[in-house]
Image (cartoon, rainbow, N blue to C red; front, side, top):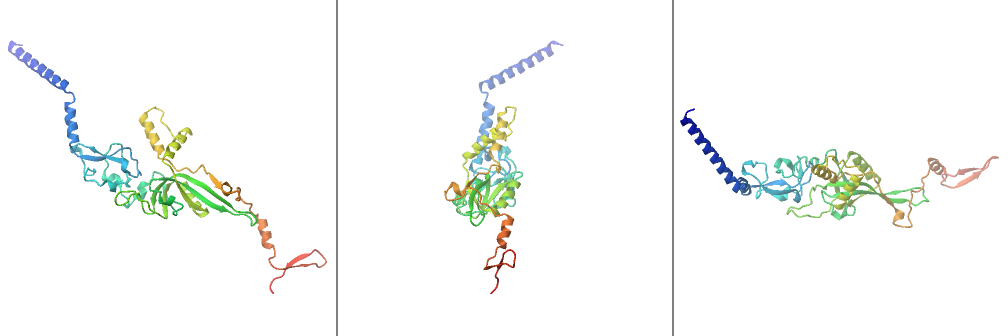
Length: 329
């Protein structure tokens, strides 16, 4: 290699090294320069509606389900809800049609609005059914049960026995932790102004399992049904009981995120019909019965049916005395 080529090669190498050192010095003095520029561009761009928590299919949207978040302008889609353009009051009460992850933008197609076709079916969880029961002002907590609340279903009935026995009055909790889907044709608790409004109604639609739907259908013919509103704090207590009883499958890999997901799913709650409690008339009055009255056997009923109801004449024809009922005039 001649001297001229060697000199050119050495000069190019020196220039490259100098440029690399200058770039390193510049970024070392301000390491967040590129990040700050990108963040500033995002903050100054549009804001889209995102989910504040994981929203599974069937979740009824509430005020705390979403928030606005800055979003890169180049990534904006037509289906996103943009700030100053979205009517948040109309979104409350909508049902999630497709699952939405935490922080994911909420799209028009991922929600179904009340009144739209398939709304109630979308509100149901997998494997669940919807059943409607009649209620009154007294049996529905004076109208303070709203869609999204959870209730217990009570049944009252009167058990009769023989004529000389007092009937047994009893009330029992048939099912616990039922989710209210609708009251009459109302699927949210807000009025046109977006404020909660208490109304009276005559029907309540509940989310149940297929087996519980059968039980409720029978219970409507056995006695009168009433609703008992559950406290929000009861869900945490039920979750602790489910974990202690081994009814919640917790991940065994000590992953906090996986445990949080499992607990959130369990906290949603499932209807429970295995533990039935009851109270009888004697629990509220000393003059009422505590046990079911004695019922007559079929033989006793036949004997009573054969007893004469009119005047009777005893006749003896050289043998046993026979009672003959006088009928007619």
